[in-house]
Image (spheres, rainbow, N blue to C red):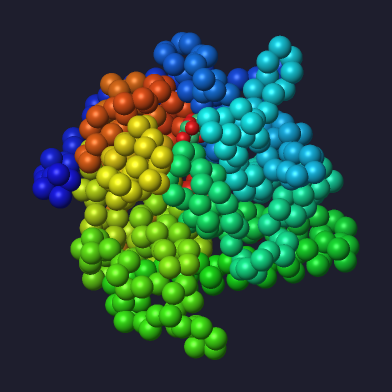
Amino acid sequence: MAQQFSQERLRVRPSSREEAVVAAAEEQFEQTLIRVRGELVGSVAALSHPGGRSDAANYGEVFLRDNVPVMFYLLLKGRYAIVRNFLEVCLELQSSAYQTRGVFPTSFVEEEGKLLADYGQRSIGSITSVDASLWWPVLCWLYVRRSQDWEFGASQRVQRGVQLLLDLVLHPTFEGTPVLFVPDCSFMIDRPMDVWGAPLEIEALLYGCLGSCCQLMELAQRGQSSRLLEQRLVLTRQWKHDLRRYLLKHYWVTSKTLQVLRRRPTEQYGETQGLNEFNVQPQVIPPWLQDWLEDRGGYLIGNMRTGRPDFRFYSLGNTLACLFGLITAPQQRALFRLVLHNRQHLMAQMPMRICHPPLEGDKWREKTGSDPKNWPWSYHNGGHWPSLLWYLGGAILLHEQRHPQADVLLMGQMRAMLEECYWMQLNQLPRQQWAEYFDGPTGTWVGQQARTYQTWTIVGFLLLHHLLRVEQQDVSLLDINRD
Ligand code: GLC
């Protein structure tokens, strides 16, 4: 079991093949780029084998979420034209249908000269992604700031896209909270995993999205201010502020906050219910949290629903919360302590695990609909995704850059862990053909149904390489709050 898994076995040696591996990865990455109307636009999700394009299923399409690291990488490399092209094609495909107006597609591809987009109608289980739409303003703002293409940012097309998207968020709802309610499967975890409601990844991303929308609207306001725009800005800023307060209040847990939670009154209503708004019974707090949190660890839980918090740890939601500044600097360090303390679970042999712990037994049967791909410790259900490591790396390096004096001992340990994780990937990924995901409690087995030459595995590694070896300062690109 993972618990008995010795830390010693995690020690890895640097490899003298570093340069060759990086050069080969760069070459693979070039092959993932495809054209729309003759112009490079972004990457397919996976190449099935070296030199060839995947024609299996939809891995040959340009997924918006898979292209997030791709666009970051292209921005770092100064290849702005491809990023702008990507943003423009996405904008062109933003839905104008009455019931989905403002939604960006999950993926698109050009077939026989025609642009085809998937809004969910073609995917397994007909699921629609919400994260794709929330990422677009973030990528757009980072592109505009890095390339200084202010004109594009302030253009009518972009501003209209932003307003259409905001319409999907800033509207009255039955419960009047600042979170965005979504169905199961609406983000990277796109198979049933009981992640419906207000899952952390969506809410953290929403926070970054609202911040980026504000930055883009401010650009337009500088050019030509209008009362309508001014009102939208005030509302968006307020929403973002309320969302943060809500998430910090209901999602952030430490050993201390849990002890308070365990002793709260239940079954409250009326004026007194402020103490336990979601009527959470102390019995739902799982025992594994005691060791997981130890004394000084903290993290954002996966979801909050009446009576049923989801205490699973989600790696991407938590690292995005750091990158977007949703959690405070001391909270970020509490999160880093937690990652370090639970390294045998979260990193093990292939950094890093997507969520922890997995759903098992009856829970797996009920919540996933007996999904064999999401078998415990596999795929989304506790599998290991190398593409996630660079987000954590970015969060650590950005924290160091913003707070160089803070807890140097901890940050030194985080840096050492990151280095080791980098070498693990460097040593294993080329041999495992840049697989999509890895299975089992230690993540040593290549995912049972994993694609090979998966783009975000390759580009995630290249991003980490860039930030660790080429230009650490570039991590500031990820700081959406910088003007
Ligand atoms: C799978 C993943 C999803 C990813 C897609 C393309 O459906 O679950 O997150 O976007 O493959 O790689």
